[in-house]
Length: 303
Image 1: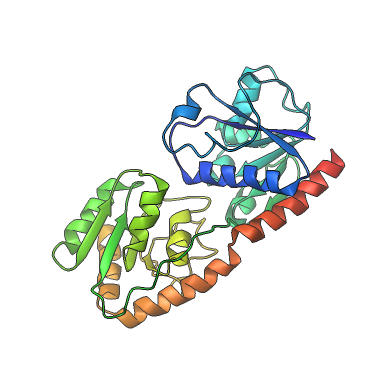
Image 2: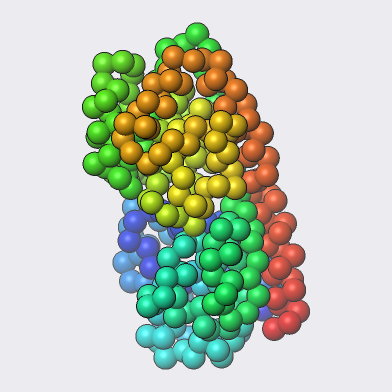
């Protein structure tokens, strides 16, 4: 059976990366034949993982026997005059905003679909409003870790603040002159972001105040780095305070103090890094694929 994937790509994000993972999972399953529609101009945007994804692509939307939708993809079908209930839908849900009444994302929950949530926190938020089954498949990642930094090496702190540049600058100012800093306040290509995480020994990572799944801490864990990150709801499944990370209050002083404490304590850095690396065993791309293929088989049998 053909399954249509749709994307409006204006710039790289973790959400696009995960959507692309599910496209690859579908190809690998052999159960459905993915076809991709991208909005005009999407393919030429730098960093687009869908630009050369190896599946058939169409330039004009038409009805399909099944759909894989995420975010505002529903609106693309609406604009093309394709009735939302005309064929079965898998709906990937990655954010807590879907549970906010009055938003377009919330309204789409009334449409029938099998929903896959990237964290239990997202599933709990949308379940009371969703028309159809709701499943959680924990986000998986696949990163080859670099060699560990020696405990005797000076601490190098990476501040990932693209989602909160103002606070990132405040933290950098508080830590200035104490140790080597790498401050990032804009989005950058994924390869560069991973390289900058890997070059640090401590990663201070700033999410939005509430997220469905904040991926950078998990990526830093896979790289064997010690992490400082505030709570954002969708990171509670793998960010365990004092075990896999330090989780201070979401303010510049508290985050800087936590990073400073880690910079002075190489043994604690090593302990957090070790626990974090173990945590990533629960979030493999292979595990995500296996769980999805099980659901995909059930979905297609019922279609």
